[in-house]
Image (cartoon, rainbow, N blue to C red; front, side, top):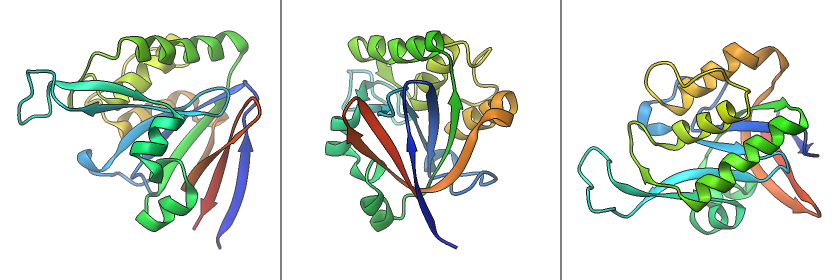
Length: 191
């Protein structure tokens, strides 16, 4: 049965979104997934590769790293931030959302602000979207270490679930973000 709901962010939650993961138990293919995060104000943030930094090769190494906030996602990945567009492209995502303290929330946000100033390169293996998302969870003290095994979004999801799953809000569906004064709300449409 389909259902829709809103998650209100008030500075005390952060989250991981795995695009292409259609349910908690789904194991997406390595190239069929992407990791983004939800900042304490409810805004989406992600790390992407664009262009070529001069060392590009066929393995996906050497792309310029780019941090996309809501406005950049709206331009480049609207199906990641708008429920109707996600439905049109059939982009289902799975998320984990955790309550955090004020110090954790600040460290999580600061990590992304600093990454935006100096994003470095994007590489398919190491230095990718899941590596950067993991870095934020580690910087905030939410995770104790890096992603075990291959640094894929799903492996990060599984690590977060193992370490923090008992306290997480977990769901899958078409998701979107609605700007409001002081932050964003997460819109969830479960098919």
